[in-house]
Length: 353
Image (tube, rainbow, N blue to C red; front, side):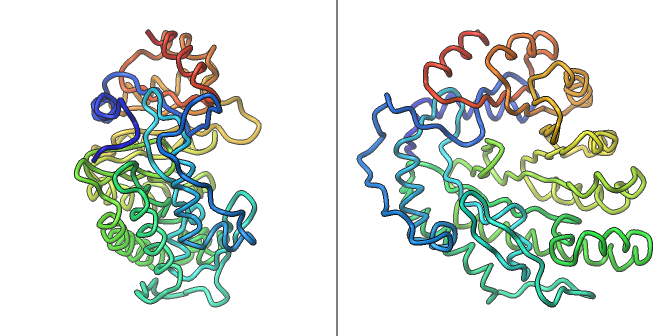
């Protein structure tokens, strides 16, 4: 694979080190386009989409748009060359029957008219499933090895069930029907493994794969795991209804990152640190809180690192980089900065040294 990222072999070594709790990764959420940089290839932009349906769900249009974006994006530092094939956050729910709605800058996932009550069933002819495969195949055909086709943000577990059946119903089941909930969680996991394997067969390269969000690549199966609904449940319920199924996924994947979202979810950190195969934890502070580079979170990062996991720190300002590294160390640290120019990347690289 010959990507448009000139220092990719060097960055891959840093990714492997980071998964193994060593060294520093400097990257960002997706990519930026610096008007001063020449394109990697002369690629024409597609015409403007006729509507949000085409913008979000037309594989041909999206493949051409992504091809243009990647040709004009900077991959300095450790920014991975990966095309974003998102079909909404938690798109496994769309594969299982939720309705997709395209917006100007997002994709909404709506509960189906007839939510499943007993069994969660995979339908190989489902529109959402066919769309996932068609989109990834179209982007892969355009990429031609110049960049990776990212794995969509499928999600799993309680979050997928909440999309399918409603958050209130799922939370009630933790008390009223725990056996049913256990059965459905296992069904969701089994479907996740099947879906992931088939999509992995489309997007994998000879050196591994990349994930759309969270700037992660690895030499094998790589995934971002989460349970955002866990902010609403106790530590005991987390260990009953989340931890066993996340643990299965860490055993299925070669490299795994857990997305810890919101101050109220920090209480589940001990349960996460108990999962031996989990490699890394990403922290999202939530609404009204300072972003990842703020000193408020230094202790949390030290707890994660001392617990044997690498950490991903998002939305760090350039001036926060050096104090952050002085406080938490230089091993197993991924720093994501909201870059806009290549000069900004060089500035932060100099700060890291």
